[in-house]
Length: 416
Image (cartoon, rainbow, N blue to C red; front, side, top):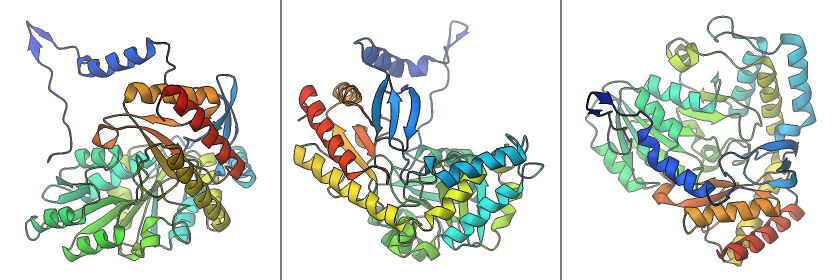
């Protein structure tokens, strides 16, 4: 592997005894214990006692606005989606107890793949049990020994893990740097297989990739292109197909990866493609072959949700208004944000350090607002972030309420 993929230290033998295999986590354990020793609530173990709607839940006995769930299009409580899941439970039971290549393909699995093909206007669709598995499976299967993967240094953990599982040489480049990507591709030996991996929306800062320019560079070098649209599907683009659609390059992308756990509102992952040989992936992709398929109720809810998202233009427009208003309001209050302009449904608020970030997270929770606390090493440039994920079901009034909560909490903690 090239730089950018960290490898854990090997256990060191001491006086005939192996090192404690948990010792590599000592710094993280100390950090967590330090936070909790002050009476701080655990920001990574919040329990939602009851979920009331796509935008509200009971947390610690308090009615709380949800601003950290990735439920971008608010489909989790859609009447048609829930009805489809209940009907599938009645008709097919709770699970398949088998792999897709054995007894794990029901009519619902084919139906959700048909819905995906229609949604993206592509020839092939393959559904995985999670979005993580989709990246793990597709990347590790198509890029093998002697091939090269060129990817953005800020790529999601599932992308890096897909690279680790395969045998290809991994070549990272600086985030969203078109020139750096071009140079990396130019150094790859003639005749080698090349795969460029990009994301439409990067989940930490909510920024988008310059896909039009990047896909053009990839094709100039004869590389195949895989784009992860997990955080843009359903919302960005005229038909909700993601940044690829908005940038006008969807037909030049060889593989589009996505997830059901965000805009679709359930769980699962997928890959769509127009490659004529794509169907062989069902027999050679180990994370697809050697895992149980999604329960019938899950694929029924996913298929119903995807078909409704095809007609979600009004929801998309309202979500954009929410994103613009929250970004504008937080900027006016004096918070530092991850992007200068709203680029997606993610608005990242940069904190001075982890301690004050955790304090701000807790202050917001006491106000009745849940956001994500994101910390290194998951974040770029060792930043601590409060990551806000807007929903199409947030009302304009709720967004104004959220801004008031940020103002009060920010002043109480000393952030603004």
